Amino acid sequence: MSDTITVGEVAARFLEACGVNTAYGVISIHNMPVLDAIGQRGNIRFVASRGEAGAVNMADAHARVENSLGVAFTSTGTAAGNAAGAMVEAQTAGTALLHLTGQIETKYLDRNLAYIHEARDQLTMLKSVSKAAFRVTSAETALDTLRQAVQIACSAPSGPVSVEIPIDIQQAEIPVPDNFSPLPPVVPDLSKADIEKLADALSTCSRPLLWLGGGARHAGDAVRRLIDLGFGVVSTTQGRGIVPDDHAMNLGAFTLFKPSEEFYATCDAMLVVGSRLRGNETLTYRLALPQPLYRIDANPDVEDCEYDVAQLVVGDAAETLNELADLLEGRVTPDNAFGDNLAAARSAAEAMVMEGLGPYTELVDAVHEAAGDDFVWVRDVTISNSTWGNRLPNLQRPRDGVHALGGGIGQGLPMMIGAALAAGGRKVLGLVGDGGLQLNIGELATAAQEKANFVVILMNSQDYGVIRNIQDAHYGGRHYFSDILTPDFSKYCEAVGVPHMQVDNLKDIGTALNSAQGIEGPVVVEINMKSVGPFARAFAGPPARAKA
Image 1 (cartoon, helix red, strand yellow):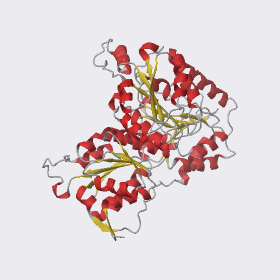
Image 2 (cartoon, rainbow, N blue to C red):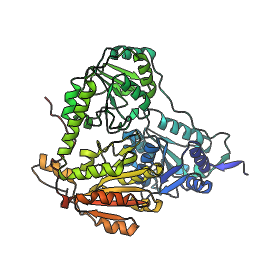
Image 3 (cartoon, one colour):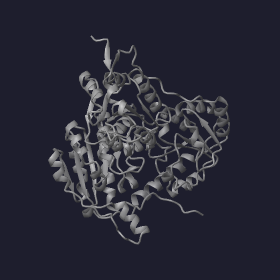
Image 4 (tube, one colour):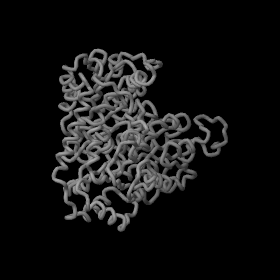
């Protein structure tokens, strides 16, 4: 056995030490030493995507579902640029992800020689779409740089981190390191005085409400303790499943509906945990939230927000909520009507959603029946997701929902692949539109090659539906550039060996979904929206409230 190994093998062994079982990417001359080592060692499954954007989306979804480190490989230059949009999505979602990209030979770096695969000031580009970005400057520092990158990616608030490794450094040999272990994530120190102050304030409340975001996904047990003390819950789309969506004390992801806002007015405090109070879930920050408003977050920067905050406690969500529950034991006297009032608000909000769907209520019912209680729900940005997919069907676990949080279309299909490979055989259902599907449709071949088990529900309106609705609402019905040529998806599916089912009448959707779930690998169930007809209420973008 040799006493030296390449930096490429160092990277492969380090990823194994991080517990990585699957990585995604596109092989290139500028990342081949690392991928060759991964292939030779055989301990990490490498999924060859058809594009770099898809690879990052896959790694992102894999990390979200598995609660692990996502890993994506790209080449340098144009290839790294191709990944930028998907990196923005991972950053928005707070996904712990390592983006490993090659780089040209060190002696030609930063000289603007138009060298093959060169990008001028690539590191600055990567920093703009990453939580942090690093360049490995020598073979001897490669492992330390990777350790630092993963520690930052996994430390709250988590996010994607990029690392450039020049090709000559990947090929260089160094003595075999004694230890490949990663560094532990950094956890913020919790102030005892701060949590005691918060507990004192909440102990006087009888109708307190928790607003749960994605930063609280690991805090489900602590949240249940507070529910048992008398707290209610409302979830952002990223916070769904921290407690089951159908829990009696969960208002669900109906954050901005009128019945919810009317219910907020009856609450005597709101504690926001692991959420940035995003504009699209707060009527552009004009949703009337309960007062006083308190926050728990690992990121002290959230104090700079559009809402007045009575107190911010900086800390890990699970640790802080458990400490809070300890301090509130026996000190909270809940209002006996609180649970009934919350349930009534949820029922009214859900009814508003269903009333707006018109004929598509049959689709929602069919998805509920097909999904059951144990499935992963992946969604792209499309009208169906914005109206009902972000709130229904019910999710039971905090890692069961994956959606394009940043609002970019075209990411749903590759996310389904990553989710399916992380789901351990559980059902995966996905929701996409015809416009979005075309952005990354090449990844359907990746899904077929990898035999990724999922069912795509394809909402085919043969246009950019939400754009047309916005044009109707705000631009005098002038439909510039929203009509798009839509391919025959059945023929594309046939070309890559993916089963396809066409549904022209939603009375047939239940049969189609049940049949699709019995097929190994990816299946596309296409709904002809021209045949089904329009929604009862047009969706024209995220709701907003005009300034007073």
